[in-house]
Length: 395
Image (cartoon, rainbow, N blue to C red):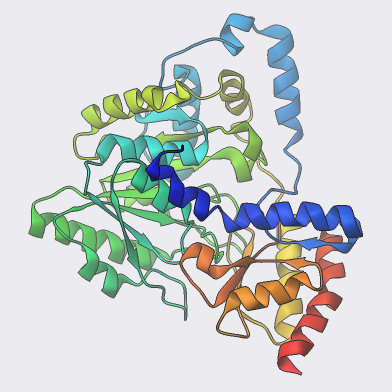
């Protein structure tokens, strides 16, 4: 028998993954070119050439005990220093190797910091819509997830409600910008107001509240939009980063967390997080990929293809009568369902081989998410099917 704690996870298995598996069945039945799968945020743009070149160079020229061996649980010091210097150059920060811990992607990084700071019953605030596995991560350490309802006009954080949701038990707040599932980038004005509320509440309650910035989509921003670097606005910020999207390496599971010196109790926090990285079962981030990242520190995935898809899908759906905020980043459209029950709309889409993820999977029913990190031809070929779907609802 499985543990009681696992039973709700089995019952409510990820709708995103279930839709992806359903897509595999449809592809086998109708052919890949006739299935329009917008379910999974799996990068379609290849990794930069330097990634392949770095792997070959490392495997051929570096001792196996280095590229395949143990290192500090925080990761290779030279890799962490290289990343720190890159961040300092880009964002005007003052990080050193000691401020970074290499992790098994951003998900592992979030688990590491939550394991480090949460006591049973501590609260973690999130803004709906949000990546639903945040709840799983918080419950891993017997924390309590507190949801702030969405502002569906802008999908910027609902800060008025947020202020009311902070209690003496609030230990952390998780933000994600550029945002999954809406593609919104939180404005500098929003970040400043959020930081001001947190400062005020820390003073009022006499507690420490950490702001956890989940940033796998940082490099995916369009139209010259700036993505604020949050440690510059609030001292108690911890950044979780992944190269999954920025270098198209989701399966390699490589990322890091940043704990600035300015964070409350930073020295102890860094030490505890390093231990949490080990005892979580990861032990350390993959050694080869750490070295690859250091060699590719200035590389960028060409996001022009995502931007082309964004324009084509957004404009195409708007012309058909669908409602959606134009995304500023990431590679998702969050489309309003033409009927209150978006799962009904999702099921209707399947009749035309269109796979979408229901907004209830992100704690925001009434919407659907479309991941446009697909081939451009998939976007173009899907629009006639979307037209048929639109005719069902709009006439």
